[in-house]
Length: 46
Image (tube, rainbow, N blue to C red; front, side, top):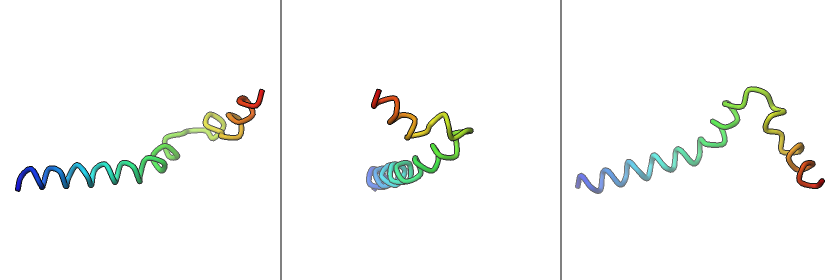
């Protein structure tokens, strides 16, 4: 039972981490220019 609970907690933790990762990344970027996808695409084209 303990192993089942542990697996459930880990699964929920990973699910939350996957769902919140984009939001956390968005909140942690101080200025938009440092992580601008358009800027990255322009650099890739050259």
